[in-house]
Amino acid sequence: MSIGVGVVALAAIAAVVIALVSRGPETPQTFGPWYPLTNQSGDPAVADFENHVPCAIDDPPAAECQRVKLGVVLYRDEATGAPSTYLISVIRVGVGNDRETHEGTWTVARGTGLDPQATVYQLDTGAPEHLRQYWPVGDDILYLLDKDKMPRAGDAAYGYALSSIPIGQKVQVPR
Image (cartoon, rainbow, N blue to C red; front, side, top):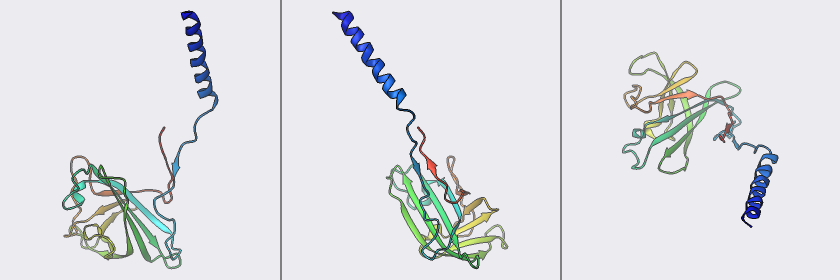
């Protein structure tokens, strides 16, 4: 009788394996960007800068914070190329999955604490005060500046340099 039970169990395992293999690979889950490709005026997103930054970006940092996912998207007037609006995303990892967003207008100013001629992206009061000034270094890096217009220093794990991400990039969840 135990041989019959063993054969039945082996047949059941084989049936499960065949069913799993024959259904083929699952379609990976894909997500679009967290921001619209155009703003309410129809201006296109021209830059998306993102990275994980230290929890010390908040004063005081949230108690359970592990890191902060920070994203800044800039829009320009399609006809003139002039700066128009921005959208900021903040997610505090370890605190929850809620996305905090801020939006408003931005301008191009001059001068950091290191270079009086440097370009600075200045966001309006729609952004929290500590997230209003950025120093673009080339096309691919955006440094968050402190109140004295100096690049913020990071910690051993994360810094305050945001990296350029292709506009509209889709993200695929790993299997």
